[in-house]
Image 1 (tube, rainbow, N blue to C red):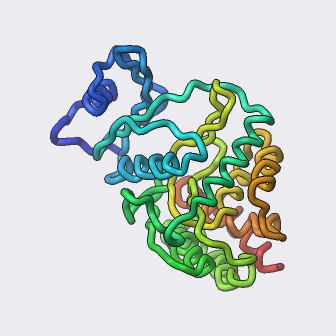
Image 2: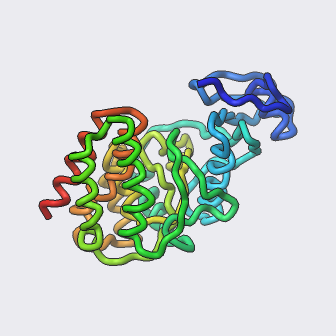
Length: 294
């Protein structure tokens, strides 16, 4: 897909965007991936410039980073500027994951969740209703009942799209829909809305050279705290047991949380099915079938 052109800066490079948005001249740039470029600014500061191919994506991500930062809990790179096409954030020098950093990350994540949100689905204060999780659209529509909200605004929209794309067949969609109908009894004790990172897979956890975990690329919103933890389980995380120990020390999870991990993984699995195909669809259907046996 060809990125949208900014009519004000039609052929702008990442380095030029960084200079414009930060007010500091750029010395050099180095491509990190298709959408990410590291830019060294005059004076020695390094930033990462991210090209946003979808309208509103840069604004939504910037709002999410700021909302997480405002909590004073988890570490996130500072936002240096953004517009409709570009997001500029501080570069995080990389280190190696350690058990000590993982325990602290677990405690900090618990503190983030405890900061709360106005409602399930609530976007960051300066965010938007139409946001993104990765490259997939995600609507932040508020609700006060987590099982109903999770079904209507997280799971079922992706089931319908997967059916439309022929990634999930109607019979499989019926399995997921039946699991959603049982969410009130599967969801465990009611909890208040937590302030979520929202896309907490291992690739969005950076282990910094400072010996601490940093979070990037949020799809931040109000949700159930077990959803962030289920995402860490789904795609793996270094020293995950230590992360969980730190979390439980700070804010113990409700009894039976391990049996609910699959329910919380339905959302990211279906997002991945929409983005990446059949393998994730099969996982989602298997998780829904397992939920129906409880």
